[in-house]
Image (cartoon, rainbow, N blue to C red; front, side, top):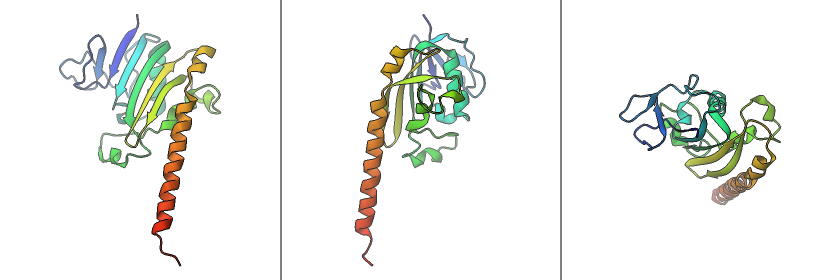
Length: 182
């Protein structure tokens, strides 16, 4: 059995998981700085929960590469962040260092034209992007696996893009209705 990591746990502790945070709060199992090399062995993790932590880290590629490094082939990673495209208030928090958008993880799947930029590879099993939040459920993979690629949820991204297009179009139409005729 591999490890189950609860990254940036704060006070949201999970029983049976390794609770990790930058601050030595009560119940935290490992105090570590995720901006540095993560303290877990390669291929040692089978499940990750990271809610409201990745936006506090300074380098997206480092974060994703370390996540991939510690995960076993097929490990499940669940990530939640503020939606950088819709949630302007995320920058009101001075501890937020990066903005995450729904497309960010599309670059790390086979078939994407920037697939080659990093060894980190993930298949999106589920993705929900709402006005204020993004949720990803990913499977890490170490070598090409057609079965995992079949699981990649292209429809989640298509649905999100269609919703975004409809929202933008509705906003443009509303703006035109409000503008006085010349």
